Image 1 (cartoon, rainbow, N blue to C red):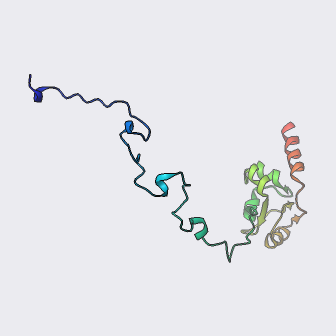
Image 2: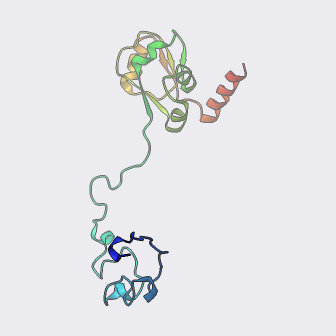
Image 3: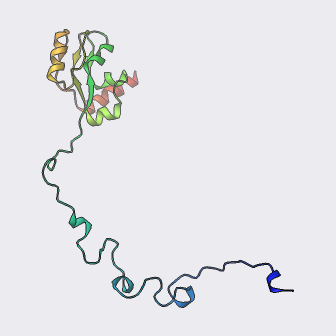
Amino acid sequence: MQLHTLPSVRSTGKRRLGQGHGSGRGKTGGRGTKGQKARNKIPIHFEGGAITLIKRLPFRRGKGRNRSYKNKPVVVNIKVLNLFPAQSTIDLVSLVEKKIVVKDEAMYYGVKILGDGELTVPLHVVLPTSLKAAKKIEKAGGSVGERPATIEKVQKKTREKKAK
């Protein structure tokens, strides 16, 4: 038997954790030598005494500082309303039934009618409209009513229609 003819035995033992001599990382335990980082716990965002990243960033100044975070309504153009029959009432429920708007979005953000396109059918609109859209609706022989009833009334209307 000769040493170079023996099969090599490669087995890694169980990894010793910790910072002591038995772990294979004795003395400094992987922390380098001296200094604040070697001695105690410091926060992740600590940068050695330099001004932290958060304090280096500027304040929210100038344009957009006082911007409103209010969500804008779902927009429906007037050309889409030609799908409805004459003299029908346009409200959230009717728009949801024709699948022009998604119910959840319409309830949450609201709906506004804008004046892009032409309207050929007289309709009664009870949703918020732009001035241009209101003029086109009245020109087509329709009318623009007040804002729609509260969400509770709209939900009640949908429940009544489901019951039928």
